[in-house]
Length: 319
Image 1 (cartoon, rainbow, N blue to C red):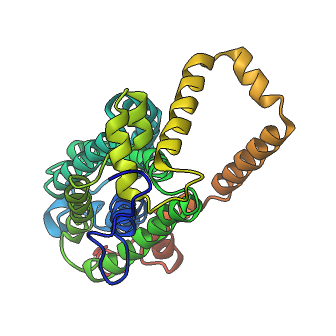
Image 2 (tube, rainbow, N blue to C red; image 1 turned 30 degrees about the horizontal axis):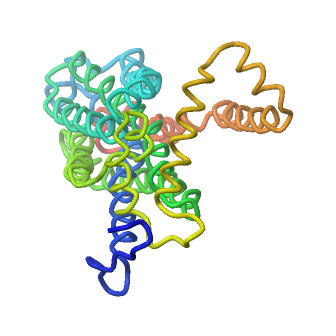
């Protein structure tokens, strides 16, 4: 179809095919946000079981995990996330946004299975590192993929869905942890159940298109045009899909010509509006970390046990 021809086929319940495609795309890729939220919250309750003695309560060590080993289990995901975030930009530029998300989901799936069957501390730590690597990639690429694919008038609100899914993942984790907290070896199920949303994400990604901007960067403009037709409703005559492709081409060409250098960075930061926005963003993130919210989330079950005097009980499954 031409750029100005409406695409009514595939519509359902009065909702156009393009809106259905956008909805499926957003719900699928924001599973990455749900995985991030789930992994952030699940470790708190899981620590209670895995630190127990190996024989009686299916812990990992004969004498239980030491405080240092528990700290490494928690920190492993964060360390992996740092590596994943650093690699995600390079990987998404070379392999594509969709492929990067697919790899991340597969890693999370495999890591969840590894943690479920982990026979010892070292294997579990490896699984935590792999999970962190996966969520680190996802948290960087998901917003980019949505922003590059969604219509301009919906871009901001749809990117926000990823943040909502992170919180939903934390809530789901709490709902799952509650019934499993008293199950012998329940921590394995807590960590292993993360494989299910990862599997949903993998299956969904098989049916999603690549980012049109990345396709243009690779010189595959015809494919990018088809993707835009699948996610854009009829545009007015003043701005067609071809016009959007030309705008993307211009942006890609300018970014290649400018490149990145200290001089370019200085030029960007010379704009007071950019400096102000950067300062606000950095201060907000710094304040979030200084508040200690991550520590509270990762060790909340331990903190509550210490507070009510049950941390030293012989059976850690009955706080």
